[in-house]
Structures are given as C-alpha cells and as structure tokens.
Length: 496
Image (cartoon, rainbow, N blue to C red):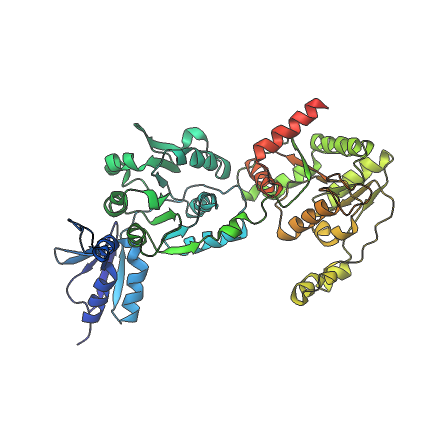
C-alpha cells in the first residue's frame, strides 16, 4: 500500500496528521521526541527520593487527530521523512514582514563569519559558546541579513546594556528607536525590541504577532516555561538561541534544541581569544572630525575617497609625523589607502625637507603568485619580494598590502601612522605584530632602541559608526578597551 503524502503545517508549532503515517516513521518520531528524564534517572540510580518527577520527557503530543511537535525539530523531521520514505509537503504558515532597511556596520572575525553563515542556512538554530565569545555580534549580523523586526529575549537585566550598546554601535539604530519591554516599560521598536523574559510571560499576546525573528539570549538560563510554553506562541519566520556550553545530558538544552533549533555552530574559546593583545606597541589613538553622510555599504567607496583627500584630517597626521621625527621617534611608516593618498603625503613631506620614499610591490611578485606559492610550500622567504629601501630615510609611504609583504625590511622603523581606518587582516596583523617585536617591547632586536616600544598612531573617525567599529576591532589586537585607549591618548596629548 502506498503511503499517502502528509501535509506538514509549519507555524508557531509543527502539525502533522496522526493518521496515514508509515508505521516505522511514526515509531522513529516518538523515539526521537520522547526521552528519559535525566533527573529521574540520576535519582533512581542514586537511590534518592523521586517524588513526582516524571520518568520521561515528551516533546510530542496528540491533539484532535494531529501530532503537535516543537518547530525546532523541523529539520530533523524532514530528515526522517527522507530516511523512511515518508512523502510530505510543507504548508508554511510562518509570519514574515516586508524587508526592513538594516545594515551591519562592522566586520566579523573569521569564526564569527562561519557561525553567521551556519545560522543563516537554517531558519531555526542555536549557537553555543562561552561568555565574551562574540555571540551577540553574530546575532546582530544575522538581524541585518534577515531584515525582519526582531524580538530579543533576555533572562537577566545585566544583558540589557550590552545589547542596547551594541545595537547602536553595529546597526546604527538610535537609542530612542530601540523597543523595550523591561520593568513595566512597554514600547515596540520598528527594527528591534528587547524584552525581559518575565515581561514576555506577562505580555506575550501583545508581542506574538509583531516579529519575524525571535532571539533568545542566555537560553540556558531562561525559565523552562519560556522555552516550552511561550516560544511556541510565536509564529515568526526565524528563531535563534544563544547558549552557553552544555552537556548532552542537560534536560534544558534538549528543550532548547527541540523548541528553538539544533546547534549549528560551537564557538571555540581559543578562536574567540585569538589576536587579543598581540600588538605590543605604544598606541596613540586620536579622534578626528571627519564626517560623511554614510548610510550603507553602498556609500563606502565614496566615503573612503573623501577621507583620503580630507585636508583637515591629513593636516593632523602630517603634524604628528613631524613631531614624531623631531622627538626621535623616526623613521616612520605611513600606511595609506592607495596612490592618491600616497601622492598627497609624499608631496607635503618632501616639500618640508624630509627624506620620503614610496614603497611598492613589484608587478613580477604579484604576477608570479609568490604569496600563494609560499603558503603551499611553507617557505615564508618566497613571500618576501625584493624591495629597494634606502639605508637612510625619514618616512616610508606604503599600502597595507605592501606592509604585510615587506615588514622584515623595516627594522629601523620607530613609528607607524595608520592614515586610513583599517580592519587588520591576518597578514597585516602579523606584520604589525612582528614590527612591534622587532622594534620594541623591551629586549628588542632593534639595537638602536633596545628598550623602547614602537609607536602606532591610530586615527579614529568617531563620526562614522562603521569606522569607529573598525577601531574597536583594532583595539582588541592592541589589548586595550577602545574607550580607554582614546582617553589615555588624549590625556598624554594634554600633558604634552
């Protein structure tokens, strides 16, 4: 007898007809969704009083001829249908809204990008990672990609400030536009609303039809009622849980898996800490007054062009270069955004009598693919192009790529000026890390300055959210909080 096609209704829960299922498919469904209660098992094995603790936990129930299943189980359900040849069709009843204008103003680290991509491949998912591993930023990136009004549920008020601050930093949503359901305050934001779980328990009926994306932060700390009774009231298109490390025996985590989504990415703590404080330099961070009407990534190239040609910004950097050389913090390297900015700095500094040289990578080096060859062979010497650098100079002008390729030639350098706001890619980070080791950090390899750290002058364009975020990421590599870095630099300037 041919098994009939079953409709899978996907809304706030999954509903499938209880009749017409293949016997083996139905049996496997119960095997997956009914499991031993770990607390009951622990007490039973230890000979402790069990009381009214149920021996099993069931995540499937039968109501009026339908099986009701939590929708975090959706992908496993589809896998079971394929595995046991159960024909099906999906009736999607989830709630979605017209796309909102939301942009992400930042840059993800490699592991964050991998985690974000894993989340975006699934409509229902969980990210697992320890504290301060970047889960919030990953979640914000997915909000910008899904462009749905989002409800963020938090079980602790201590989480509010972090979300509030990062929403403004990374999504550039003004404070007054962020919705709140906290301690009696009830406002729904156009883009994002943050709600304490206790308020969601009270007012879920007001919230249930307002969102296309639900995020549950610190899901492992949320009351079980939120996961098993309130989450199933929302028919949003997407759901995401942010969860701390867990054990497979954890009953609450099993609930999170079934009611919100399977874990799609586990953040490695070592990856999250990688790059922290690796640049051992004296950081001089200076805010600029540069401004531009930047709204989205589409404006980036035009903004960058204006930044490189901005006279007031250039004047600040030129003045700092001259002061550094006069104080004995030369020779200096100026990292620019390309030929236009290189020419500007070369002309001004040369006219003022400094020995200035522009350094570029030979075309032969780029054409022969030496970088790729060196990676494949493991011979780093292949990645070093032959570059002519004079023995005596005041300033070298080069691009980030050139610096990443020829930093081993720059052992005399005492100061580095980041004339453009950069995201430190791995090659550039490695170059700056090596320069700080060669030219400073006490006991250095630079015999002329054996105990003096290299200086890195970092210019922070605080009027542009994206560029401020780039500085925050650079500060992580400096090993200093960005606000502290700026304040310390400003204090030094005032003292001088």
